[in-house]
Image (cartoon, rainbow, N blue to C red; front, side, top):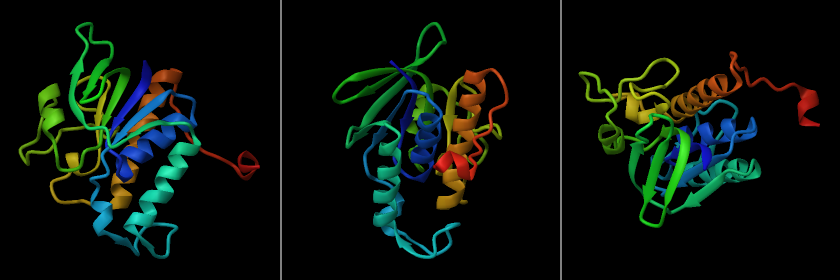
Length: 187
């Protein structure tokens, strides 16, 4: 059983997986490689002058892998259900079933898993979330294009993933959690 299951391997999903794993939570991520980043070239991404979307995704996956995220490349999630007790989720793929305490949905404009899970939607037909990215389903988070009608941008999506991760870490640590590194941390 993982503490966190991330469904989606674009900037939002990989950002969430990076922050949860980096801070000690057992994290599994499902990445079907259907991200819009393959059509992108980033000139406007903070800290990156210019990078092709494919290269950005390779770098992002390498970074997530370095923090031991259990990344399932190409494994399609077919269902997410909240456990009857309300404590955790069952994630079903074509290959297997997984358990997790938290789930982060990062499937772009594909909102069917959120709908099947019972997440509330806005009048704009996007997943309704708090500023923490938590949905109406406790411990289920939605990020990126799932929660924005037309504001689809890689850096916004990555920020949404980070916000979800920090809220999960806050719940797990029992106090407001900040992920703030200093130069000494990098040594």
